[in-house]
Image 1 (cartoon, rainbow, N blue to C red):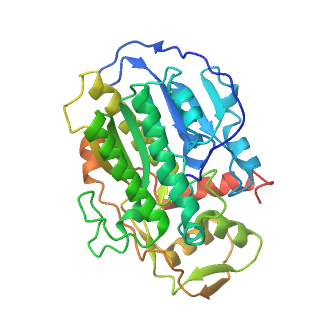
Image 2: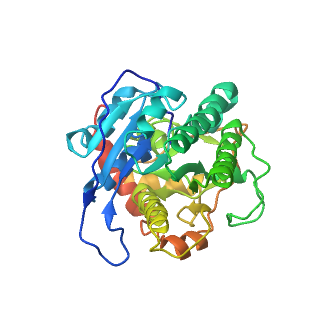
Length: 359
């Protein structure tokens, strides 16, 4: 999940145009104007680039929060800023006036990826996480309601499953037992999306992302952190005995699923898609989990270097495993992750070594 991209300075707004494209079977007739929050984060910047490359008009909202170096986020979004169909607004999703103004500027759909991210930091700052992740989502939904925007995609997380014993995790599993404030805020976001669907008819799709990695991954996440340490010959911290499992999912596959979810909402609204329920939850994962020990072995191969492991106690709030059942996303979105961990890690290492200031 993205780290929160929020409050900033004043910006110029203008009414967006809609680019007409030839109709093609299975695709929307028009590429609409969409709003993406957390636009300069890891997932957000990749989504902006994909949509712009396909002819969409994108308004990005980001505050360049200092959870990690804001300079990295500005690098993430640099290419998008060169595109005439992209506008960046530096604002906070908790800022009611700013979100009202953004949503009244001609956007047709909202993709809400901005959040305070991270399980362990949420334990240290639960009030801040609740404020940003819950209040920010409500503020954005209210702005969408007032501007009659009825299509909303919410970036959720596999962390909502907690320590579910049933594997793999399916969308209809009980998620009433989160084990971190971050996970609880993500479930709360899903619930408030359903509330706005029920009360106001805002069609909402919640995407549960499973451990996303790839170029531009946040530097605090395991693959990025481990790769930098191994590259420098420094020990890596392995929590517990290394048998904790994660369903690592490459960024391109996540973006494929996210774009499919956006297009489903647009075509549903225009009457050209099957009339599925207007509130949906989808798992977007690889559905091939690895233990931490297996991940380190694959990283060693990708880097061509051996890791020095230091075992440390398990951390409060960490789940034991994640494992996505992607049957529903495959059936309804055509979701089909195609990037094995070896390929994804090789691409990540190439990016890491080509970006020396990240090292």
